[in-house]
Image: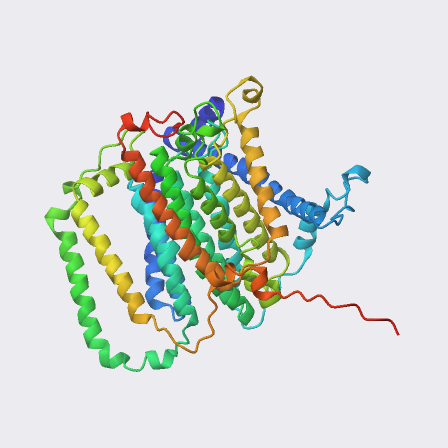
Length: 366
Length: 201
């Protein structure tokens, strides 16, 4: 690293060399995050098809393999799908706004990937260790709705526009509940930095993690996350039995695939954030010998995998919510719960410590 | 010119161009989207100043919520451009006067000695654990707590008033009450009838 920095300094001069070096380094790190993420997205689609298939007592994709190896049956499917999508033509409908039509998918995927900049994967592995990390993630995820809105409007199609209107209302509503749930987390941890939030949950076992004192918030956050990513049972934005495919009816080929990449990377983001904020991130469930031997990154990965499995489980199990029920759940159930919990939490945190220490089971408030 | 200045001029150029685009573009949806771009680049400029909380809140509130609703409304409008431009020349002197007054005000601020750049030294660099959010929160909830709470109450009143003005309860609307639907039990709707099986002829 130092050698490369010196090399840049010699080549471009002292000041410019430093700037260009940090630029190159950050670009390399971004690739190191995005490429595994996109691979993860590809294999999440495979996992989804396999898991839902076995829940419905089907086989799922089992044909495409690598180099004809029989026991890898199905593992080549995501790659084959990607190649197929890239070969297909992107059809721009008549009367569509061409620039915005292409811009729609781009504006969906860009914030979905940009939010990963502040996510810590282990105590040291984080691209941008900024103080307002949680706010940054909220800002980025709130931008994702533009892609959907633009795509639906630019398609010049009634079904796409209906899907757009549904999504815009749904995402804006659930963002509020999500934000309030996060307010509870930052009240507990006294920090907006994601690394500090995880470090605030240290203390020996899984009982110290925020999912116990903030259990309703954990549930609200995760369900709002499912709604934010427009996943089943909240997938009225696509609603294939009502409005064909919602906002992406008119899209084909890679433009269509980009929407899917964004949806799945948002799913992984919500799962990662839930495990960082409520399930202790990279911390092992018990601070003891066999658990601490496993690196923190693996623990985070396991938690994310479990939450992603829940995403797929919901999709296989629940029927789609009706639109007015979604709005009711967001505005009349989740937001009141979160506001009440903020007040309760604030009250508990203001109690004198002599009173708090009287409870032997109190691990979270001091 | 160093790296920071290049970023500053790049963002400023985009900001000025997109702001110009907002007022010149004919399509209202394009205008709204260019306004989003203007907000976003303005947030970038604030980040350069070290005001991370304000920058991110600008994106979160204006870009993430306010402009979404704007865009939502603008998309559903069917705007007739010919009718919009009808009284253009009639109102031109008035609009021109307003523009001249605004420009004069901006110039007066800019050439005034009290606002010149040497009156505003660059803020001292902060320690690495300095949190813009924390400092703002401290200030808002201690020194300016009354003003802050007052603003919150005014916003709440405005919100309640907006809902009260637009809420109409119509009697003939076919509305389903979800909470009633949720608590429905099987015995409320399903009647199981046991019938003797019919004989085979």
